[in-house]
Length: 400
Image (tube, rainbow, N blue to C red; front, side, top):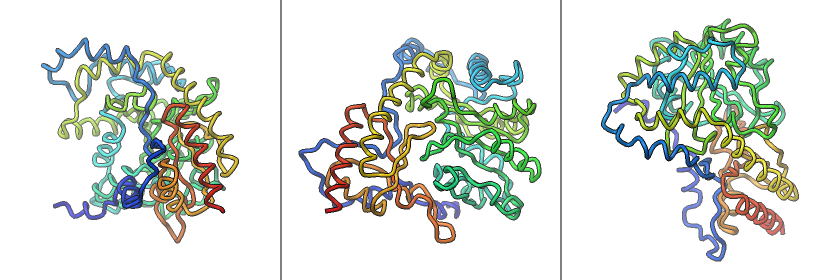
């Protein structure tokens, strides 16, 4: 077996299951899960109709590169959304459709990392665990940059020593962040691009929460948008990941894309051709319909906005919690350690959240996820409000 398999950490939800093993939940209270970031809003009916109307396409092999129509729809959406120069995002050179960002991120690391020399993959901390696992299995070493409240939950790139960049081959960004929802501003993205040019590494920006934001007039900036703003129309050393999972409530469709540096994506496409991960044609047609429609996305944002506006004031009675810049998570401080909070909240109120330390690594004695929990406001509004009320009752009762 690949010895790097032994380097993999258990996934956060494995740790959570172990933490809660043996507890008894109150049977008179219906369970409410805020732990898993799985969208629960209805999938768009028109997308389901496209799939149903094209099941005959099951008889056709899809191509790894996807159809011209899908790549063109993606390029048109990204160009409009991120204010890119007309025709700068070439559907044939700058876009690769993928089966969700998770497999896409993993594949990118395998395709890019040169393990024949010292290789590190740098990521925020907390982080989406696939960044780390992909690095291990590519033979690279992860390096973690702390994202604390003091720096707005964004890595302080000015504090990163030159030695970290020396062997860096990929820098992962996550904006809006998971779990904090923090959006990286343009001036920071420009700084990161300058670092990539200086030290010759790839910036991989995970932007799968980019379409869940509170202010319709102020969408989060993306990495390619920053490239366009500074005249970097070839997107050199920059790639982004986007998905329909959160944007369109289609996590089961497994549809997204990678876009950016054409030279990187040429090698990436070659890797994927051997990897065997082409998107089924009926899914491609459904994806085109989803990328071409914004009405359902605006409705989706409105539903999340209503939940945040209802839940945050309730929780503030007992917790230090802020509205996120974007995304559908809350990242509150806990009045006790995060594992105790998560376990006892399940046992006493049948409300389930994820301890922050499970999303982070301890570096130099510091874990930026400790004494925080991640709450995903994916349940219906009424359930989210009920969960918030139970959390208040739990905290007040626990203090007594």
